[in-house]
Image (tube, rainbow, N blue to C red):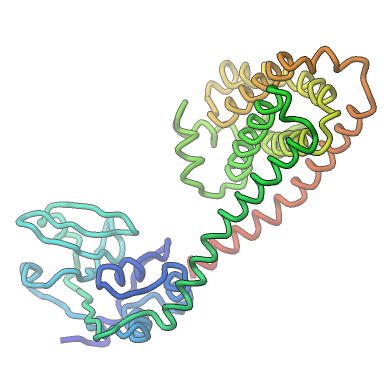
Length: 355
């Protein structure tokens, strides 16, 4: 039978997905964002706290202790099981098929042998029973809000595409084939340096991790940890790159007459690409996939400027070149000033998630 001692069992859910996964398996209507907020707001991560939250969804719960672990086969799935050792918290058992157990741990579906699972399980189980019509409070409202929130990024993308098309048409860039390549490379470089900035701040991004593993696993982290990752020991090369690609893209779209000066700025960056590749190959003996991608982008930009005829127009040096230099430095200083604020906010968020 259920006891308070069983309901006081603690669980770990660093990604705050346990409640959402549980409701999905129970077939209870809910929204992901609201449910994550409810779970994060739980003052104590215990089965009792979880059962109180579930009551608001119209779900009753109870906890048991099975002294004979073989009794697990008589339980109806899904059910939660408290484990020790490698799992270190709650798992949701989704099926028991012979000597194999399938379960969800930290949002990931896994399978193991029954004997191994029984060794990790401490005998405590948590079961829930949805009432008729069980659902998230104000589900309709929350679904509409979630839809609008998810739509924001697509609306933003459409606005950016519309502005891009307008800039190309209004400024006559559509007649220059090289302008299409330059804009595409600048946007790609901006995204890569954005991932580099996140890496520098140690903000977890699965996309960045997968990207970095292409040439060498862990190479990006190793290179960014070296003193060479700082420009004059003050500015991260990720900040410099983000400033370069953002200013170059805006200058291209807003001031197309500055294309020759943009070509000259690009040529000034090329010696750095040679040094960076040399440093990674011979000094650090590690490869940063994101860094190498940035270097390749700079050379692709050079050839785009060259074939577009902008390199030969870059001399004599015009005032635009110096204005661009000021813009690069200004944006770099701005990004550098914002970095500690972003890092502090991320640290506070991580601390909040651990409480």
